[in-house]
Length: 136
Image (cartoon, rainbow, N blue to C red; front, side):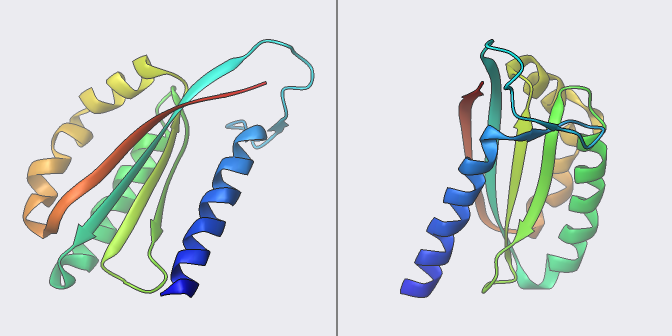
């Protein structure tokens, strides 16, 4: 239990440390050193709990969601991670340019159909957190 907790803490420390160096869509690093303007962006962390007999269905649908979301103009990064010790738990870690980009994402047809499509696959409701983030 302590090992899992330490791994989780280490993961989040690395995740938030990575916020200082962003990657552009073309793969170039942007440390913000060339400008003194504050860049605002938002991070979504969504933890989902999938019924064991629907994990394969979820993974297939989630890959399509990740691919489509990463194509959106306001998306900085959209990734899916599987829990290291529980194959039925996943987290989506998303980084968006601003609230308008999130609103546009939530209105996309593939996102609107996500809930009804995947709802019966879930063991319990998702845990959703949205954070304001800024970096120089």
